[in-house]
Length: 443
Figure: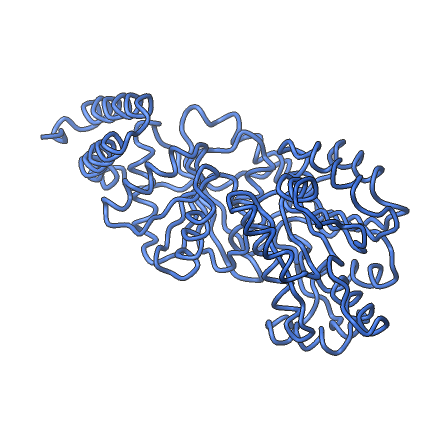
């Protein structure tokens, strides 16, 4: 199975883009358009509304950034000036909004594009000052914060808006943004171009499509669920009590590789990162409960190579532009197949090879079999085996690292329930060790 991500035979110039944008693509190392770009950009340049059904990593951001910049440049040439508040992009997360803005700025650097990001977690008054001073051509934001500015920021409006882009619309509608979206749609002109991009076409997305798009062209650039050929998948099966030992074993065996470890809860990201660092592994957490500055700081440190292991919740599994991830580890098996595909899609990008490893225990068998079924009717993810004696040798160090990490969290006002559950986990490890090897006991 191959995701429709491959570059095409056409060039960006063949799509009808102007010389300035073709050069900008070349400067970013974009040699040829991806399939979603090849199919979407010509329709966009014809002035059509678009619906793009595209998986993460398909190049969809370029598919809407390039034609809107082309329209902005054309409009400025006709007016002899550049109109502010020309484009508005709505994103479900702060990190994705920032990355979209970075792409606008990178591709539009040669034509002087001004871009502002409006997201929660930052001072609203400061954002208002930037809006007034910068008069941006492009606004990228989360719906809640943009709706706040439309209601409360004096002198700010989008009455001249020409382009509205809804990125990852399925997530926008699954994160209680519907009220904010309604407010925004009422505040912007009906006479505009609208692009809607989504990984899946849910009923809510279809309803939104009917409400805000006019005779759209629908482009599907990937199967609903697909795995690139360069991705290797595998799983380890172990007792739940030894999952942390297996995690350390996997990460230690891939030392130096860039890895993303997906957990179910925010607390787990913090705790696991602390445990792994106690064991000498370069782990840093990112989750939705961190402040904006801390999340971006963690992401930048990971991208820069200061830490090679990112412990994250599903907030990081879609949209984040992290190109060179070698390994994805499913510490918790996702309860639905869609999240699995989005997680493993963080590796094996842009033609690179990648590895996705799942840690499966006795409680994960049902969800894991459902994931296999979504990949293919007869598909089985290969089972990996580890030398269990080697894994058990890690148990004492892992238990001690957890004890020290738990103490650190307690001293910092950590969650008591998490501490109690970790004590129970430790007892389970000791019971398992007692059964498997009576010589291995905690001193």
